Image 1 (spheres, rainbow, N blue to C red):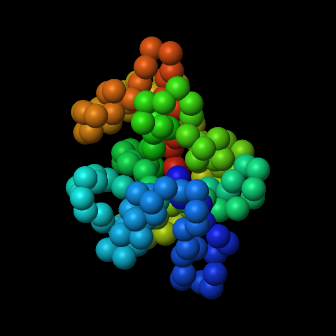
Image 2: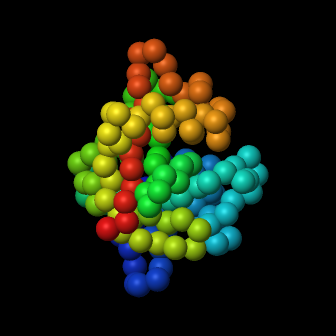
Length: 152
């Protein structure tokens, strides 16, 4: 996850700070520099940048995430790479569901909400069909939370 400082003037993005991991910092910088696309191992994946408010710090935190378009909303997956723990960005948005989404060259406020359990398995199956590596992120001990991002 990428930690960010407070946003500067309008039209500027906060600069990533320490604690995020160099890989995510590079993805975020590349995403913003190249109009919402990235290269390397993430080339061609549907990525967005999700900025949430830290539950304890109150500071904005930005994370690059793969998403699945579902009608007028985007769905993200709190898989944490198959870890038994939810990722920090998920815990943060549970505390503060008002988020900012960057997709392509667009940036907008959104509301984050857990996906209805009745929709969960169908959306998870669609994601695995689109990105087969996600199949390894779900374990018998943990159902991956899915989050719907709806434009505010």
